[in-house]
Image (cartoon, rainbow, N blue to C red; front, side):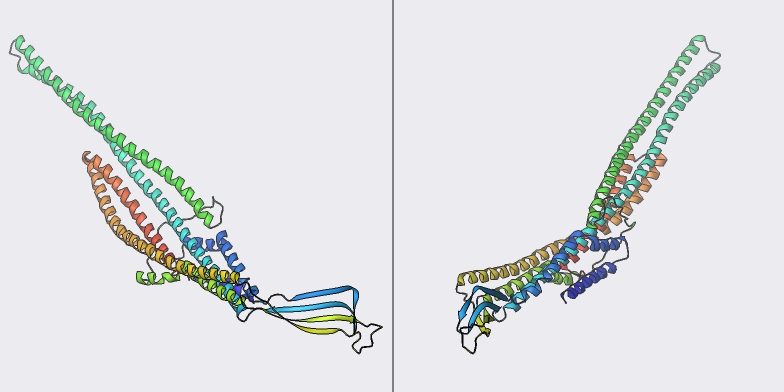
Length: 478
C-alpha cells in the first residue's frame, strides 16, 4: 500500500510539472525545463529523501517487537509435579494509549516537510534554468547587435577611406591646374603688351609668376588639411572597430561558459549544444500582484517549516505519552517431564502461566527534557515560517519594483532606439554628401548600440523577474 501511495505521489508530481511546463509556449525553453525535471541529479536526490521519509511512517506507528525468551535447565529441576527442563516466555509491550498515533503523525508531517523541500528544489531548479537561458539569449543578441554595429562601422570606414583617397587625388589635380593657369597668364601678358619695352615685359612676367606660386601654395595647403582630417577620421573609426571586435570575442567566450552552466542543470555533457530562440516574447503576470502576494503562504519553504512545527508538536505529544507506563501482556510456558518419584495427578504436565508487565518511568527529568526540546523546536519552526514570510514579502516588493522598472525601460529604450536609428541614417547621408558631422556619427552609433542592448536587457529582466515572482509566491508551481 505504501509503495502504491508513493508511486501515485510521484505521478502527480510529474503531471503537475508537465502541466506547468506545457502551460508555457511550446518553445525550446519548455523542452529544457522538461529535461531538467527528468535528469537533474539534485532533484532526484530530494525525491529519494522524500521517498525514504515515507518509509518511516509504518515503523513509527507499529507496536514494539514482542520478546521471546527460551531457558533450558542443564539438569532438570525437580518439582512436585515432575521435572522442569525448560521455560518459554513470550511478552508483548503496549505503549500508552495514543502514543503510536502521535509517532505516526510525526513521521507523516516530516514526510510532508521533505515533500515541500523537494517542491522548493524543483521550483528553484526551474527558476535558475530559466534565468541562465535568458542570459544565453542576451549574450546571443549582444553578439548579433555587436556584429550589426561592426558592419555599420566598416561601412563608415569605407566612406572615410574613399573621401581620403578623393582628397589626395584632388590635391594633385589642383596643383597641376594652378601651374597651367600661371603659364597661360604669362603668355597672355606678353601678347597684350607687345608694344611696350623690354623692361615692362620683364616686370609683367615676374608679377604673373608670383601670383601663380601663391595660388599653388594656397590650394596645396587646403587639400593637405582636408586629407589629414580624413586620415584622423579613418584612425578613429578603426579604433572603434577594434574595440567592437575585442568585445565580440569576449561575448563568444561568455556564451561558451554560460552553456556549460546551463548544461549542468540538465545533467548533460558540458559541450552539449544549446539551441536558443531567435526572439524572446515578453512574459506577462498570470494574475495581479495583490493575488500573488497573498499567495506567498503557498511558498514551499513556508509550508515546509509549518509542517516541521506540526511534526514537533506531534513529537511532544508522543514523548508525553511515553512518560506514562507501558503495559506488557505475555505468557510463560514451562516444559515438565514426568518424575518416577511423584504421585501427583499433575505429574509430567506442562504449565502455562499468563503474565502482566508494567514499566515504571520514574526518571522524569529525561522525559521532561525531551518534551521541552520538542516544544522549543515546534515554536522555533513556527517562528521561522513567519520569518520566511516576512523576508519573502520584502523580496517580493523589491522584485515588483524592479519589474515595474523593467516595463518602463522596455518602453523607453524602444523609443530611444528608433530615434537614434533615424538620426544615424540622416547623419550618414549628410556625411556621404559633404563629409561633416563625423564625430556626431560615432557618438550616435554608440548610442544606438547602447539603446539596443539595454532594450534586450530590459526584456530579459522582465521575464526573469516574472519567474522570480512566481517562485516567491509559489503560484503556478502547483
